[in-house]
Length: 103
Image (cartoon, rainbow, N blue to C red; front, side):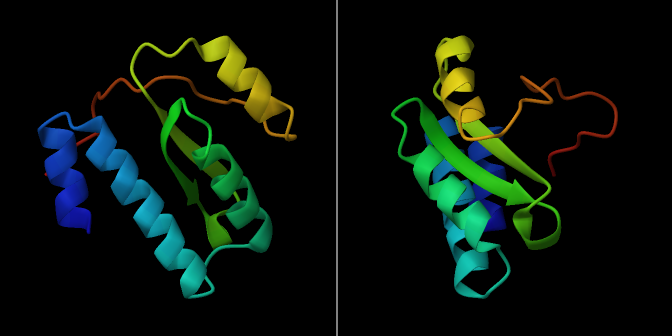
Protein backbone atom coordinates (compact mmCIF):
# COMPACT_ATOMS: atom_id res chain seq x y z
CA UNK A 1 0.00 0.00 0.00
CA UNK A 2 1.06 3.60 -0.35
CA UNK A 3 0.95 3.87 3.44
CA UNK A 4 3.49 1.03 3.82
CA UNK A 5 5.68 2.57 1.11
CA UNK A 6 5.72 5.94 2.90
CA UNK A 7 6.49 4.21 6.21
CA UNK A 8 9.35 2.34 4.54
CA UNK A 9 10.81 5.62 3.25
CA UNK A 10 10.44 7.33 6.62
CA UNK A 11 12.12 4.44 8.44
CA UNK A 12 14.75 4.01 5.70
CA UNK A 13 13.59 0.43 5.12
CA UNK A 14 14.84 -0.07 1.57
CA UNK A 15 13.82 -3.71 1.46
CA UNK A 16 10.27 -2.80 2.48
CA UNK A 17 10.14 -0.04 -0.12
CA UNK A 18 11.36 -2.44 -2.79
CA UNK A 19 8.64 -4.93 -1.84
CA UNK A 20 5.98 -2.23 -2.14
CA UNK A 21 7.34 -1.14 -5.54
CA UNK A 22 7.17 -4.73 -6.79
CA UNK A 23 3.69 -5.24 -5.36
CA UNK A 24 2.37 -2.06 -6.97
CA UNK A 25 3.88 -3.04 -10.32
CA UNK A 26 2.24 -6.46 -10.09
CA UNK A 27 -1.14 -4.91 -9.24
CA UNK A 28 -0.92 -2.58 -12.23
CA UNK A 29 -0.12 -5.57 -14.45
CA UNK A 30 -3.06 -7.58 -13.07
CA UNK A 31 -5.43 -4.73 -13.91
CA UNK A 32 -4.10 -4.24 -17.46
CA UNK A 33 -2.30 -1.01 -16.62
CA UNK A 34 1.21 -2.17 -17.53
CA UNK A 35 2.47 -3.12 -20.98
CA UNK A 36 3.61 -6.70 -21.57
CA UNK A 37 7.11 -5.45 -22.44
CA UNK A 38 7.37 -3.55 -19.15
CA UNK A 39 6.12 -6.57 -17.22
CA UNK A 40 8.79 -8.76 -18.82
CA UNK A 41 11.59 -6.25 -18.10
CA UNK A 42 10.38 -5.56 -14.57
CA UNK A 43 10.19 -9.28 -13.81
CA UNK A 44 13.65 -9.96 -15.23
CA UNK A 45 15.33 -7.01 -13.50
CA UNK A 46 13.64 -7.70 -10.17
CA UNK A 47 15.21 -11.17 -10.14
CA UNK A 48 18.74 -9.72 -10.19
CA UNK A 49 20.25 -10.18 -6.72
CA UNK A 50 21.33 -6.53 -6.49
CA UNK A 51 17.77 -5.28 -6.97
CA UNK A 52 15.27 -4.62 -4.17
CA UNK A 53 12.43 -3.27 -6.31
CA UNK A 54 11.39 -2.21 -9.80
CA UNK A 55 8.46 -0.01 -10.81
CA UNK A 56 7.42 1.41 -14.16
CA UNK A 57 6.30 4.98 -14.70
CA UNK A 58 4.14 6.77 -17.24
CA UNK A 59 1.42 5.52 -19.57
CA UNK A 60 1.20 1.73 -19.18
CA UNK A 61 4.43 2.04 -17.16
CA UNK A 62 6.42 2.41 -20.42
CA UNK A 63 8.16 5.77 -19.97
CA UNK A 64 10.73 4.74 -17.38
CA UNK A 65 11.68 2.05 -14.89
CA UNK A 66 12.72 2.97 -11.38
CA UNK A 67 15.17 0.39 -10.03
CA UNK A 68 15.95 0.34 -6.31
CA UNK A 69 19.18 -1.49 -5.45
CA UNK A 70 20.79 -2.77 -2.29
CA UNK A 71 23.09 -0.19 -0.66
CA UNK A 72 26.71 -0.45 -1.68
CA UNK A 73 26.06 -2.31 -4.93
CA UNK A 74 28.62 -1.29 -7.56
CA UNK A 75 26.63 0.54 -10.22
CA UNK A 76 28.63 -0.33 -13.32
CA UNK A 77 27.97 -4.11 -13.50
CA UNK A 78 24.25 -3.65 -12.80
CA UNK A 79 23.94 -0.83 -15.34
CA UNK A 80 25.70 -3.01 -17.93
CA UNK A 81 23.18 -5.81 -17.30
CA UNK A 82 20.25 -3.43 -17.59
CA UNK A 83 21.64 -1.60 -20.63
CA UNK A 84 22.17 -4.96 -22.37
CA UNK A 85 18.34 -5.19 -22.40
CA UNK A 86 18.11 -2.04 -24.53
CA UNK A 87 17.54 0.40 -21.66
CA UNK A 88 19.66 3.36 -20.65
CA UNK A 89 20.21 5.08 -17.34
CA UNK A 90 19.00 8.68 -17.29
CA UNK A 91 19.30 9.37 -13.56
CA UNK A 92 21.41 7.62 -10.95
CA UNK A 93 20.81 8.21 -7.26
CA UNK A 94 18.21 10.23 -5.46
CA UNK A 95 18.77 13.53 -3.74
CA UNK A 96 15.57 14.78 -2.13
CA UNK A 97 15.45 18.49 -2.69
CA UNK A 98 12.77 21.11 -3.21
CA UNK A 99 9.62 19.42 -4.38
CA UNK A 100 10.57 15.96 -3.07
CA UNK A 101 8.23 15.69 -0.11
CA UNK A 102 7.50 12.48 1.78
CA UNK A 103 4.24 12.95 3.68
